[in-house]
Image (tube, rainbow, N blue to C red; front, side, top):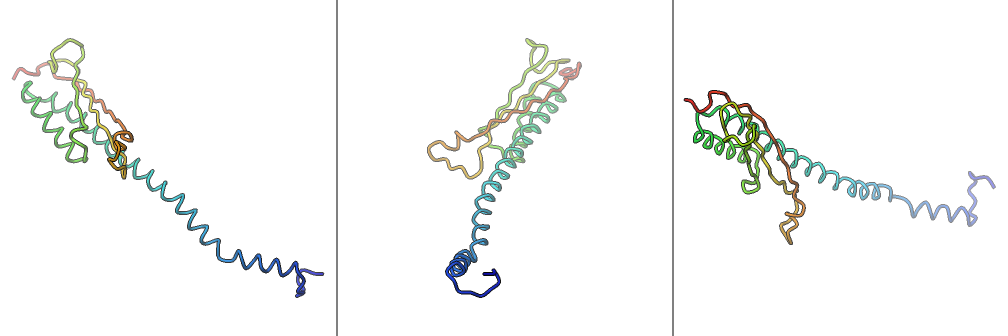
Length: 162
């Protein structure tokens, strides 16, 4: 029998019944698979954007703190400027103030920091909590990402003289 004939034998009825059972499910499958793929992808983009934003904040903080200290007139002014820059960067980039730490070091080692002619190394460390992670059972601490930025600035040879 030819496939285009209109016979009513059992094979044709089974094929028609199978076609009727499958009708309309492709759209539903597309939506379900699309959502299962899209939701993790959107979360990944949001998490990476959060980490990148915090990294840029830490890098800007290290660079500006190093510059503020190197251009200060004396140690007291350097400390005030560094704290003002830190507070400004924390506010601008939305960093957690408690999670940001700043450390200073000078090269050559052993010199008073900051010192005239030394190379100032500023390190800013922070932790980024991933978005939508609740602070239940310490999950926010487990899923936090540590970031670090380092900036180097040469201090003037006449620093602190006036």
